[in-house]
Length: 449
Image (cartoon, rainbow, N blue to C red; front, side, top):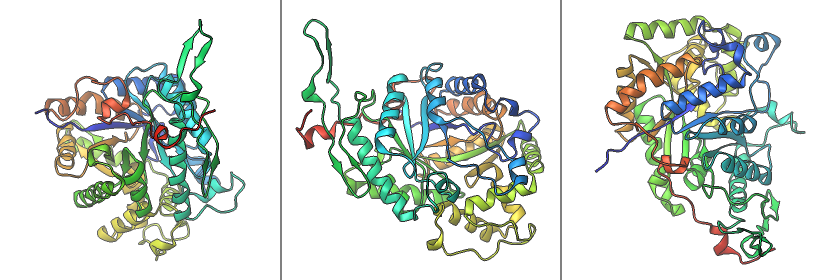
């Protein structure tokens, strides 16, 4: 029997995942908008046999004041543009783009991901998010962000419509017979005719069915609403947990919900984020972590923490405890991250400064530090004890953080039989061990254009 192997994503936050990554002596901060730099990173991830590269996204500058704007990185590529370019300079690694269901329309998103899937020969994936910032609402003709529950209602219908559009062309719809003057078989191109609470979409899509049938659907929310959406629709979950017990509980909870949607546990890969601080020795890893902490500008640390808990901490003593925070049901930002960070501060008695130092790199995800062997020990514990199917790796700074992981951690994973030595599939679905979905629209409608 083949030993189960973990899945790995490389999270590209440029020039690194730490809020002060751009100040690291080895970070190539000047290349933040340089395609050749991103190309090099993607090819490094492919050399390491990563399943996918992962791009986050947002629709606003997240700086509360001029000082924070001075101290933080607020420029990055729009994901579709960048991933389309990366598809031409890579062959195997999957391409995951984050797109919000709150500030987009299903037809646009379906069309773009179908196009990316064709451009990449079946390597596209959509990270479904609902957005969580008031600043984003004000960039889209709105004064306030939709309520959390409403955002997830909209998201659920949004995903359904996108998948219908991907299915609006049957796999055999393209004929391209010059002699008979038949480019396509119209009876295999279907209207969607969706009319719901949030969307009215006629269809069909004007892009033929994607190579993977559906690009892989990734989901990043861990609230109760998020877990329900993931159990019904997601094929990969990017989630954040601090302890093995929390991660195990989430893993069993979400996978336990899948049966009611007619899905099997293996149809979903749960991949918590990890922030690896690597050293040749444990002492060197500790020194590397200390350097990162020393580089954090105070205002930037407070601003990051405030954004993550949806509560402005700028007026409170930085060396004092968290103030009294709202109850979870009053939070309209990221509920799961709010709870995780509040629980962490309460559990360890952290001041505001100590808390932002703790989360300035991992941003609520799990920080693991040590030698390559110690890093793998920690990954293996979660992987073999029902807490993870793999991990989304968040390098502290780039390119060095990714280089160190590929050159030193991946070989240890491979030696232990925990990770592939070569790609075995042609598409992202095949590498993740996910089936190509059947075209469900065919069975539901015979209406043609």
